Image (cartoon, rainbow, N blue to C red; front, side):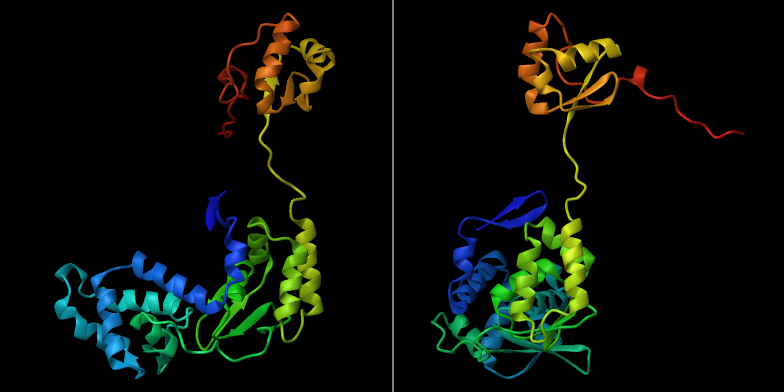
Length: 304
């Protein structure tokens, strides 16, 4: 459903349809993926332990200490950190566990009814979490965004794309700023869809100052960009002019960076090569990796 492209995970063909599936089905699919991906004895033992305890709160450090004697020596001491990571970053967002920090430090958790059904391998009989027809978060003029848990997976997907997570707890606290909007634009979202999403889900609307800033960032996006090009180097300006005006070669010239360096598209290399030969020119074969050493500017040394 996802594909890696230019350093980003982008939705594949079936992803939009998957997001429209009931959230219960999404949870089952994602939890099964987690179990298959992280099928480690220590994590599976914790699942079995918490399932046997039921809905009571579990102190994660104490549970890890109980499980350590049955672990391989190389894994001992690592379990508390591993459990913290998987509970906070995956299982709690899936509403499999509730998590909290007792006295602000000790992580505690308990299985939800959804989690107990998933571990038992039976369909969830729990209705979707009650709430308004459209999930709502709070968006402040400063860009701070407060999303009470549980956050629907569709909303969570968009939040992770356009905002930066700052704090986890009973609510997720995000920040919307220029860098996060730039990240969303780079990932393929457009300015209009960003503002529509925020307006649809923000209980307080989109603050005017933030709407203006997002619109400005959207307009600025792409005003400068990198483009791969190829230079056709000529021995003298007269030869470059001949190529720029030649009947067979002019169509391939996109511009120039100097009187002897013409810009062409790399994909036009082969047809331009044939056109140059037809004009009676004999270019060197291939494309040089960089400017020849003899044509580079001399190095500049500090004056002593």
